[in-house]
Amino acid sequence: MLDGCGREIDHLRLSLTDHCNLACRYCVPSGARPSPNMIDPSFAFELVKWLSVCHGIRRVRLTGGEPLLYGNLVPLVRRLASLSDLREITLTTNGQALGRLATPLREAGLSRINVSLDTLDPKRFTQLTRGGCVKQTLKGIEAAVHAGLTPLKLNMVVQRGFNDGDIVTTAKWGLEQGCIVRFLEVMPIGPLAHVIDAHLVPAAEIIERLSECFTLKPLKQPLGQPAVDYAVRAGDLRGVIGVIAPTTQPFCERCRRIRVTARGSVVACVHDSRHHGLSHCWDGQRFDAAEADRILENAIMEKPAKGPNSQTVTMISLGG
Ligand code: SAM
Image (tube, rainbow, N blue to C red; front, side, top):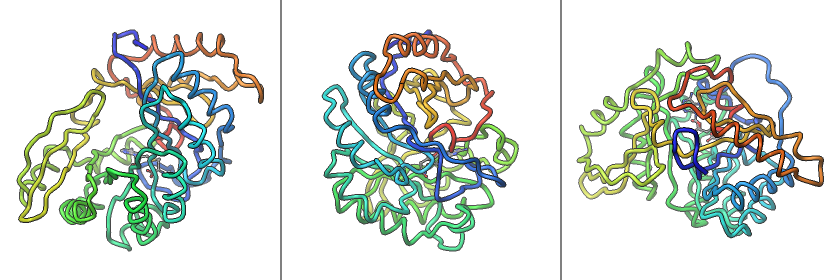
């Protein structure tokens, strides 16, 4: 599938629910939470089948909200794993419920997993996530590595004044567990943009801090991967650390991604407020592929060359 700028689109981020058991300050607006949306599991399956068979989607990342809160997750992964056009099914989670789900997910056919971990410090973790328990996430990471959901990537969103002092500690801990550790610039997005902006730590500064402890050797960047990865070494400790810089070094020209939200809308660009509804293409039993083709074509052709910074909602609604 080629978009209006000639970029090949073959990655899908599918949000299963916009409900989350945490409320990270850069992702979830404070105050009242609207009632959660969950995508119908049969609709989700038909969507991915149609996108992979008819439109060349090859990699699916299940996300949310928190995808581990989706009741039909394991059966859905099992069905998706039967789609021969898909090369990879991955999932992004805060890991709070991963301890009990890692093995069933692996057995159902999940390829690997990314876990968000913004700090190892128990108090700071609870503050940053507004109520999370870091021990639970660490247990989840251990279970996922044990289950073979590897290479497991740890994602730390770096925020000045909150966790920027934790970069090296998290990197070392993650490498010791055999994980790839990724540091992300925070994205000023939607209604939280003004709150987030003041806490941005640019990728160049993240690399500078890592360089004080590690030797870093840049690795070749695979197609469609926004992270710049480095082979790193500190004494006997070796591994891979990556940095993702959507804010200071946007990678729009290499973007191969579309999103489908838990409300069943296509979002072609995370920074674009245009959402293209597909939910009327599903009547509970039949998927109207002809109508969905028409909507998808519009969305793909309108995918902007560069993120327009017009997004009106935050990542919890979009699917991060
Ligand atoms: N609940 C899951 C989790 O925590 O990984 C999946 C959904 S969450 C929206 C997906 C990812 O988006 C997380 O790694 C989170 O840190 C990231 N994210 C959310 N808002 C962000 C922002 N404004 N800037 C950068 N990353 C963000």
